[in-house]
Length: 197
Image (cartoon, rainbow, N blue to C red; front, side, top):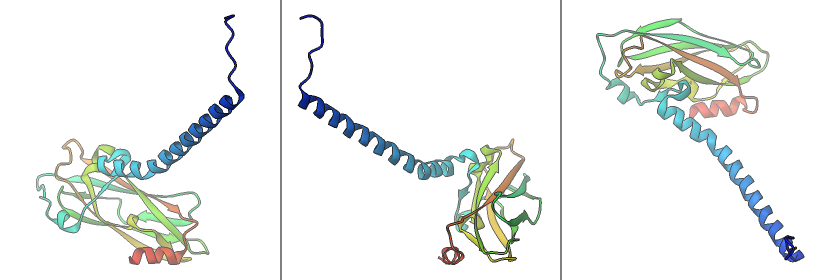
């Protein structure tokens, strides 16, 4: 015993290398699967908690069954934006409305394709302050589906919503904003089929 490590037989070293390679490959596969699963998991968490200003969806019957708070008015402001690669004009028809929690409200936005080609867009909504998002329930919204616009076409885009009566009392104003993004790989026909289903 001179303190030197005993060399492993050559076939034992090869087996250890193969085991390590399998473990590394499984680790890489697990990380890819985790990353792939994070998008839908993140979306569900945002919808349940209102994290990052994500609103919730509610059925028409449940929306109309909400108690209306006749003593309170909340200002809802509307904002609109487009991504830099989307050649659309996009704006709300009104800048703001005053609503009572529990009241079903219909608001409209307008989009116009100012390019010379058909474009399909998808709107991403957000509510601020983020603490208000779990209490902002959408009944119907143009953001639920892809939106195709022909060259020069203009379209009114409705959103129907209700504020939950449990909205914290310190929230007197909230902002609903949409950003439209271009979907370059979706054909106008596929988007139209998507809206019809």
